[in-house]
Each structure stands twice: as structure tokens, then as C-alpha cells.
Length: 406
Image (cartoon, rainbow, N blue to C red; front, side):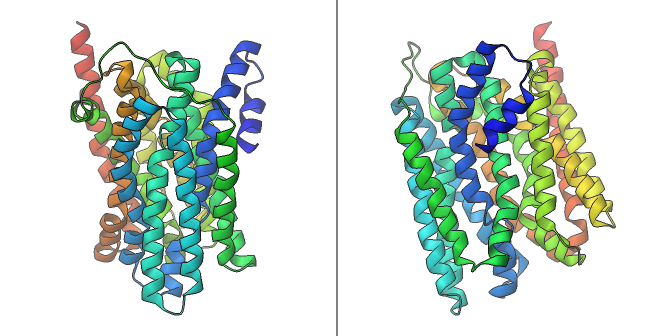
């Protein structure tokens, strides 16, 4: 598979044992790849479809896209609890069924295009179901790898899961555009049905595992409180990614540029490269130091996007943004998971992931409003300004950690 080939090509210096472990992790996070491929395929198509074909505003288009993240927020905590009590396999299976259901509704929506309101309502429901499926697939493969291979591989599992997710977005966005341009738009829904069906069959063949912990789990809201500082930083950083993924097609259209999907792909490829080449830096320097550097780089990339007067400059900005955002999730996530007992690892990752869901859920209406009030050209300046807050918080957490050691 695509992800496995990428890892194998870059990990030629590993020992046989290390290579085997990493390939096992790839086997688990491949579910994220297939799940996020279902998310990525319509990502560059639906905003334009809602705005241009159905005739709704950028705010409506952004709000419909962001409904996915609202549903993900609701389901994420539930899925984390199920993972801790029943194991990750049932959650992964349910996720794939959800993606298949969303594909069926999306197909129906495209068939009633003449009735724009009905089409929009069906697409909104589709986004909600997709969000539920994403909430279940989110951290489940990471937990599956941790339970099967041991907690010492947490950072690698988190990093590779991100590689899987954004590899899928890198492949999915242009694939969706390609399908939309060369075939009927309904074929997008057909592709989204077939992919999770394959993943479902693959998941059924894998051994189910669940944790057996001596320590009593702590309450969900206590876990949420513990991981909140790290999650808030992640959520603020996610506004940059959310702005790029939700609005880059409209941004390119505003400036009369072509190949917006290439911008998403460039972001994703540099994101993947950052995860593969630099994830080891988290164990060497610590999550907070790595996160601080990454947030600064992401901010610089967004400033380049804001100042871009040519699509090639925008691609460069997207590349820097992707490289910067690449290690924010695993760097802060490793620090967050350390704060809870192993019996709450699934809940901790789920709670931590809630903040990126909140961020991406707010992206559509918040940044759509910024576009309407200030203009499309100020989108990425706004994103960069928000991430400055995250830099300050991480800096304070780093100082606090240093004082605690004294």
C-alpha cells in the first residue's frame, strides 16, 4: 500500500526488529489512511460545489464542511471510553460502516441537485455522519498499536497515524478533483463507499486486543482538564490547517489561480516528511520544545501565504505551513498522555483530539466571517495571528515545566 511503501523507502537504516515493529504500526494506522481518504476525496470538491453549483455563500459552504468536525467532537469522547473498555477493533469497524453510510447519502444528494435546499440538507447530514466516523477512527488505530506493541511506541504510533491521515489527504484531494472533472460527481460517492468496505474486511481479519490495567481509570472530565492546556495549543494551531483545507479552493478562485488541490497536496507532503524525518526529535528534545519550534514555523508559512502574489509562492507557504504543523499533534500529545494512567490512554488521546475537532468545527463559520468582513486576502493573516497565542501558551508551559524540575 502507498503508506507502507513510503515508510519502507525511508526506513532502510533500521534493524530488522525495529523495521518489523514499524511495519506492524503501519498495519494499524492504515485504517486511518483509508478513513481519511474518504474524508480527503470530497474536501477540494464540496466547497466549490456548494458555492458555485448550489449557489450558497462562502459562510454556508464553510459551515456545512465544518459540521463534520462538530460531530467528531461529540463522538470522540465516546469512542475513547469504548476503546479503553472494549478495545479499538469494534470502534474501527463501526467507523468504516459510518463512512459507507455517508457515501450512500452523498450519492443521493448529488442525484437531487436540482433541488438545491434538499441537496444541501443531505450534504449536511453526510458531513455529520462523516464526522461521527472520523471521531471513531481518530485515535483508535494509535490505541490498537499501543495495546499490541507496548506504550514505548506511543510517539511513533501517533506520528505514523498522522502520516497516514495526511497521506490520505494528499492523495484524496486531487483524486476527488480528478473524479469530479472527468466523471460524474456521483462517482465520488461511489469511491467513498468502496474504500471503507475494503478497510472493513481488512479490520475483520486483524486480532482484537484490549487493555487489562491494574490502575483504576479516572473520570472523563478530570482527563479533559489534565490535557486541556496541550489541547488548546493544538486547537489554535489547527485553525491554520483548517483555513487551508476548508478555504484554499475559494482562495485560489478569488485570485484566479489554478491547481488549488496541488496546494493541499504540497501541505500534506511536507507534513508527512516532517513526521517521518523529525518525529525522533520529540524523544530527544521533549514535546514542548519541538512544539514551540513547529508553531513558529507554521506561523511563518501562513504569513508567506498571506503575502503571496503568485500561486508558486502560495505553494511555498503551504509547504512551510505543513512542515510546521507536522509535529504539533504528536509533540503535545506525548506530553498529554504522560499525565494520565495507562488505563486512561484511550480517553486521554480522545480528549486531546477533541480540541482539534473544536478548532476545525469553528474554522468554517469563524474564518468564513473573517473573509466576509475583511476580505479573502486576510484569511491567512488571521490564522497566523491566532497561532501566536498558541506560541505564548507553549512557551509558558515550557517555563513551568523547567521550574517544576528545580
